[in-house]
Each structure stands twice: as C-alpha cells, then as structure tokens.
Length: 118
Image (cartoon, rainbow, N blue to C red; front, side, top):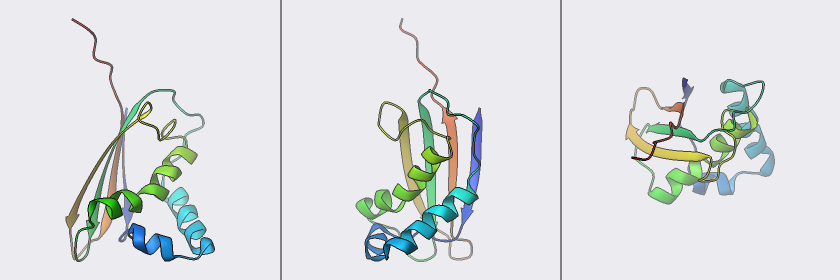
C-alpha cells in the first residue's frame, strides 16, 4: 500500500510557526487535515513517510525543515495515516528543493516491510 499526496503552497518555517497566534496555527492544522485523506482506522504497522518540501525562494535550515512539518505529521496521525510519530512507528525522510513556479509539499506514505533474519 502506498499513498501519495500533494499539498499546494509553501510551508511556513518553524520560526514563522512559533510567531503565529495560536488560532492561526489551529487554522493551518485544520487546513492540513482537510487536504489529507483519512482512514477509518489506523494500521498498527510502522510506516515510512517521505516528505519533499518545494519552497519558492530558499531552502530551510535543518531545524526549520523538521519544525515546518510538525503540524503536518500531527495531521497524518489524526487522519489515521500513521499510528504514532515515535521512531517505533514512523520512519521519516525529509528533503527539500526550490520551485519558484509551484511551491508545494509532496508526501509519500508506505508500510515498512519487515526484513527477515538470515
């Protein structure tokens, strides 16, 4: 099972999120919930989530990159696309690029297949 989804627009950086009023952060979180598909029930399996953030001007530094997807990861959990956001349940891979014409965030979610011993 593999889910691919794109959220249009640029993500705010962690620095911007920290300056937002709490109501503005909640509106952003609610917007992500609506953009993402939802499941009826959560799979109790480890998931690999690959997120590529396309910014219009410049790339985030590493702490801003991880902070910018915090609300997005919380929305994946709330929509039951991942079980939890701990390393036991989530293998997170973040990348970023510049796209002046089409800023967006691309998300791929797939189940981590267990590797059997020798």
